[in-house]
Length: 218
Image (cartoon, rainbow, N blue to C red; front, side):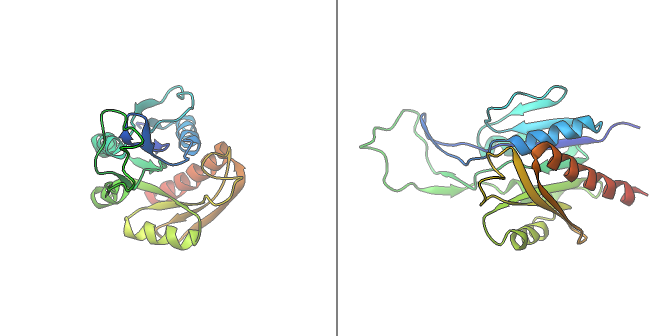
């Protein structure tokens, strides 16, 4: 039986204003990379689509490097239909500047108010086109009403699972080596994963999802 194929996104995106300034977020990519390595160790065939991070490329994993939200959308869309599991752990910027300059803008010419345009909602688009045989997992990085927001996104985006992630605390989330999350399924299962190294959190997430997947298959 061929191995399951798992597509994972990780890291931030950068939305450039000019060659030296961009809009981004504090995502380090550590959670997505931990998921990719754990999926590899579980025997999955893994592709990792990564925004700009300062992490070593994992061995035995196909890598696709991207920068902007539009870059990530193109890369994910190109590969989506070929994968059994898709886990969107990347922190994709919701907006980008309406225009970007090819040369550095002198500070006296830099606009006091940036005109912004909304980036595509990659996860919601995937939820609309996923097949019955595909499993789609999203992340909800929130600072308040964490579980309520995650449950809402789970339904609105037609996900199979969502990982609710409280990023308001300094000892977990974005740049930390540790995380604590709540894993929520579309059929109402909720699993609390307590503060631990992201490699352990990744293992708990994937093994819980895999167990459910196997039960469903039988």
